[in-house]
Image (cartoon, rainbow, N blue to C red):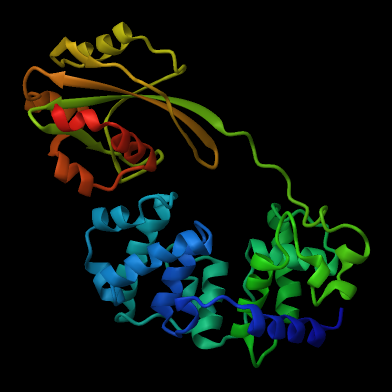
Length: 360
């Protein structure tokens, strides 16, 4: 496929079909960076409200750098991959402390920022500073694989170099920003994963996949490993209008978020007697008549884990002794304080259902 034809066709298509999005109307690298970090987690429709919340809360990067981590995580809640939110916070502080609050203006320097990989660096460099460097995300992989007939496994690290070299050879020097936006938008709304609109595609006659009947076969992507099952048994410890929560530590999922006292087992079948015994062995005084057993299971699927959770609501006889609370790494919070804490979606889903908490 002729290089100028490919780029010109995509850019012309983009000018007619692009969606109106706030981060496309700015060359502010902070807003561009923020949008790219969010859009790595979710689709545009779901990501737009998060982008607007962050811009409203932190109009300039100095505001984000000065914010407490819990506040950042609370605004991020629901997007998943919370390490990206922590990296984002760290990057904001890095830019303020090391770069005087001004984003680096080139691809190589942007790569030095924590949590900024090749894709994000290319997006900022091209959109904000018009540097000639091609972006490579899932949409771009798909468009290039189909139009140019690349059968390399896009999940294999070695394939990235092949696709990157092709993308870099196609990007025009005078409009790198528009080309990058165009090819990603083309993949998002025209050359979609399952049902691409080949009938009205401007690249139809020169597209390798279309002319060879390989649209559904390209791109090639090896399957991910099956998710590992985990079984969480949460004890919602309540006393006099307060609820004991713990901040999750490093080394596992949801670092820095808050959940309840947790017992993890090898099975979801943990009977009530066993559950209470676990608490008594931890030194908790339990009134067995004040235990509300789980009404249903809550399921949450992560990229490599499939969690099944049950919640046991327990009214304590008295406030936890300080030593026991410290050993269990829990602290009491009012319902209002609990609402403001950053929490996994799984915990928020339970709280929405658990109207009984109000009366404990």
